[in-house]
Length: 417
Image (cartoon, rainbow, N blue to C red; front, side):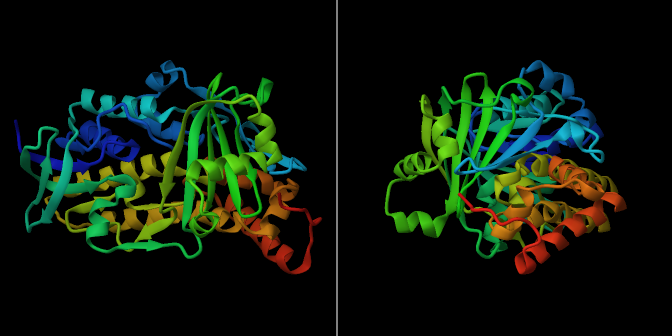
C-alpha cells in the first residue's frame, strides 16, 4: 500500500470527491481520507441548475441522469400563513442557461460522486479519521486512524481540506469567523405523506418564511420529503425544549407547513445541525487548499451548498494540480482561487443577509420583471458563476430598491408569517 501521493484530500463529500475526480482526470495521484462509510445520511438535498455544468465537465451527467433523481424546475417561496407566495421558474430566466436541476437524497448522490472518483483511480479509504497534519518545506504529512484503530502516516505534495463543517485544518489554525447575527440551528427529518406541488410544479422546493425563522420542504421521491426548520440558536435556547418539540410546535403554528403535513408519517426525524454561516480568514496557504464547507458555510435558504462545494472542489483541484506540476508550494492561481471563491459566495450572501429582513421580503414576495430584474435574480439564484454586466447592474438595481424600501416603503407593506 502506497503512502506517498500528489494530493491528499480530507473528506469524500461533494467537494472532496469533485476535487479527486478533477485531479485524476488531470493525472495526479490522489488519496481520499473519509471518516464515514458511504453511503451515509447527510442534509443539503436541493441542487441548483448550474450544477449541470460541473457534471458535464466531470463527465458524469449520464450517471446522475440514470440515478432517477427528482427533477427540480423551480423554487417556491411562501409566507407561513399562506397569504402570498412567489415562484422562480428556472426555465423563464432570460440570463439562465440551464432550465432545471435535481433534488437528491444525499446518501445516494454522494456515494455516486465518490465511487466515480474511485473508478478513475483515486484511492479512497473510508472510516479513516484524520488526527494530525503538518506542512513541511517540500511535503505534507497526515496521520489518521483506520476502523480497526491502527495508526497510519501518509505524505503528499499537497493537502486539500474538504472536511465539511468539521473544518479540520482551519479550526486548528483558529481561522473560523462567524457572520454576525447568523448563528443558526436546523432541525430536520424525512417524511412520507407530505402534500407537495404536482403537475408542472412537481419537484419544486418550498421555502416557507416565518417571522424569525423558515422551513424547507424538499421532495426527494414521490412519497418522501425532507422537511427542516432553521432558526436562531438564541431563539432555540430561549424555548427550553427538545429539538423535535420545537419542530413540531413550529409545524402546528405555520399554516403553510401544517396543512401540507396533516397526513405526514415519520421516516426519520430529530436531526440537528448547528454552526451556520461562517468563513475562514484564509482558504489557501503553503501546500494547503480548503474547499467546500471547509472554506466556509452559509445559510442554506437558497440551496447553494452543493453547488458552492462542487465549484470550489473543482476550481481548487485545478490550481493544486498546476502547483504540483510546477513544483511550487504557493502560486498566484491559488490566491486567485481564494478571491473568486469568496466572490461566488458573496453573490448568495447578499440575498441571505437580507432574507430575514421585512423590507427585503416585501419586494421579494411581490416581484416585478421590469428591466428584467427578476431574470437577473433567477440567474444569480440558479448558481451562475460568471455574471455578465447586464445581470450585475440589474442585481445592483434590485438591492437599491431593497435599500429604498427600508426607508420609503416603495412597495406594498406585507405581514410576515
